[in-house]
Image (tube, rainbow, N blue to C red):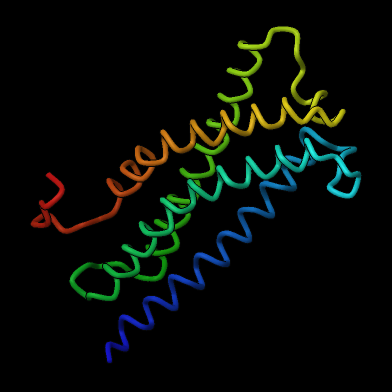
Length: 172
C-alpha cells in the first residue's frame, strides 16, 4: 500500500471540497450584493436560478483547472527535492486561486459586455430579475462556452507558475 499516495489523495479531496465551498460561497455573496440585492432563490425566479447556476458552473470549470496545480505544489513539497515549505504552499495556492478568481471575473464581465453588445437596449440584469428565462439561458450558455474555451489557457498559465526544478524540461 502506498500510504504517501493515500495521504496525498486525501489532501487533494479535502482541499478541493474546502476551496470549492469557500469560492462558491464568496462568489454567490458577491453576485447577490452587486447585481441582485432584492432577488433570492426563494422568490421562485427561475431565470435567477439558471443564471446563478451558469456562473457557479463556470467557476467550477475554472477551479477544476486550478486544484491540480495546487496538488502539484503539494507533491513537489513532499518529494523533498524542492525547497517548498508550508508558507510557500500557501503563497502558491493563494496565487493560483487569485488568478482563477480574476479570470472568472474577467470572463463574467466579458460575457455581460458581449451580451450587451449583441442585444442593444436589453438590460440582462433587469430581465433576469423579472424572471426572463430565455435571457438567463442565453447569458449562461455564453458564459459556460467562453469558460470552456478559455479554461485550458488558464490551466497552462497556472502550471507555468509551478516551481519545477531547472532540469525538469519535459514541458519544453
